[in-house]
Length: 140
Image 1 (cartoon, rainbow, N blue to C red):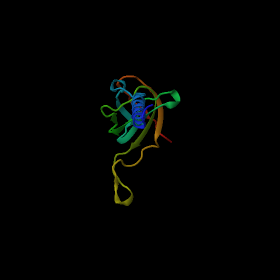
Image 2 (tube, rainbow, N blue to C red):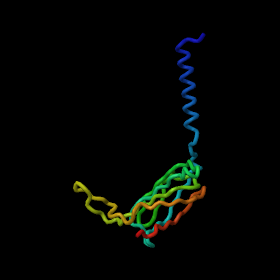
Image 3 (cartoon, one colour):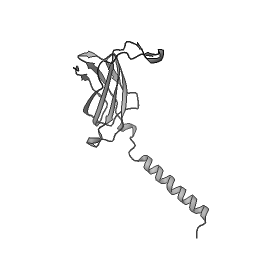
Image 4 (cartoon, rainbow, N blue to C red):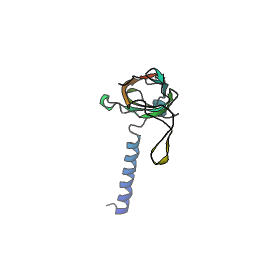
């Protein structure tokens, strides 16, 4: 019969192995993560400042990583090593005029005034680095 301390060591080892195996499940290899960049306009003009987020479309069974990028002068680019796995994604775009304005409590908002309500679109992205030029239609 095993002693209580050897049983604890055995149990701890099994739990550690299970944690390692679970940590590896679903992990994306660096070679499976792709960068997206491009130009982005609103009503035909470059968005001066903003952000874009890429969320895997769970309704289409995409469980890849999400990512985001800043928009500056109508261009966006994901940071190195941060990207998407390709397939169906939901994009959310926020755009601002880029002219700093006063915000609450004496601070400044460097983004400026909102150009449009958050715009949402779905896209099917390639499983490779790509350029995706996007247009946010004028809202009424």
